Length: 77
Image (cartoon, rainbow, N blue to C red):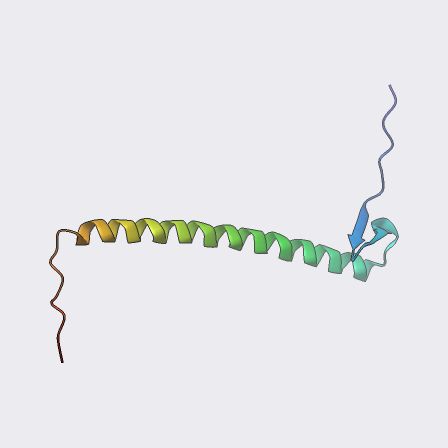
């Protein structure tokens, strides 16, 4: 059986393609740093979505609980 030839990794940045294997080490390190930053951003965006859903759920519960409580009268000045 033949093993399919593996394509070299390609960096696409600002509409241009680069062979990642042929880039200088400092550029590869920047690419890795950006990948880590992207992963962290996605993780924190997901965390914000979870917090927003939780807050909305608490607001619904608060609204439900306050229905049976008489609010304070508005003061007229």
